[in-house]
Length: 270
Image (tube, rainbow, N blue to C red; front, side, top):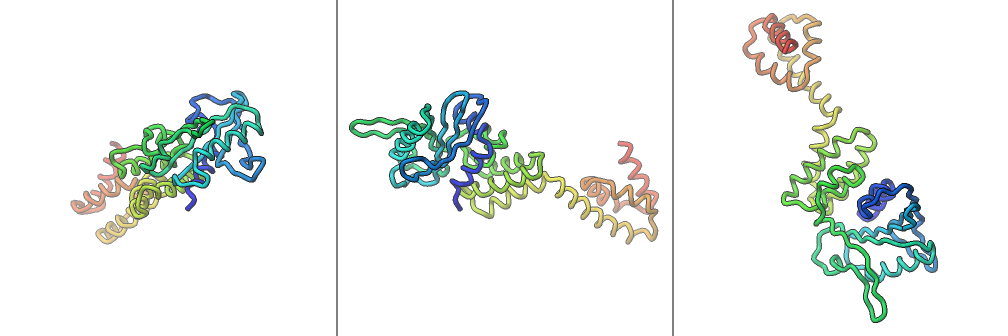
């Protein structure tokens, strides 16, 4: 799985949010640049031109520290090419996705006898999860952030994804999140915590639970009582899943249909 490409897709889809995060400014206009740079074919992962600030934001997403040429030299090369092509200031950020103690992940400059070139480095495992959990555009990166309880973090991520109102957006973010979570978590745990939390918060899941609960109590009621008025069963059908569970517990003490009607009246008046 090309994790870098998932991040590139997110940055291109939400350029303003990524600029706010990495530049700590409120950009007015952003244009996503083509990443094919001149001279030789060389591709940068993601570039944005902030026209009001007259600046290019260049982001490199990395899962590995090994690179040919090495990352510091690549950043110098990209910077020179961007300056020559666009003649504006360039801010460069390398984002390491997977935790490592390799010195490259802690290196923020290229140095040789005549040149010093600096760029920023962000190590996702050191980032505060709060920023990512509360931002739809950055949420997919949240499983990679700092935490003392990775399982709890993944559960929180699932709940945040579930709160996204638009169904298509929620499904897309859930997919991106599940993929990126694979850099840190076992597949079974991702499915257990992330997918389970997503389903529990979804309207569709709640509807399924309610329907299954109604089918169960409907069988029990018809088995116990030979005839139940249709209007009474419709009132039962309108109960939520939790109320139906309560009815199933109270049902053991019912002796006739009147007990069921009295219980429903009590629920509706409470």
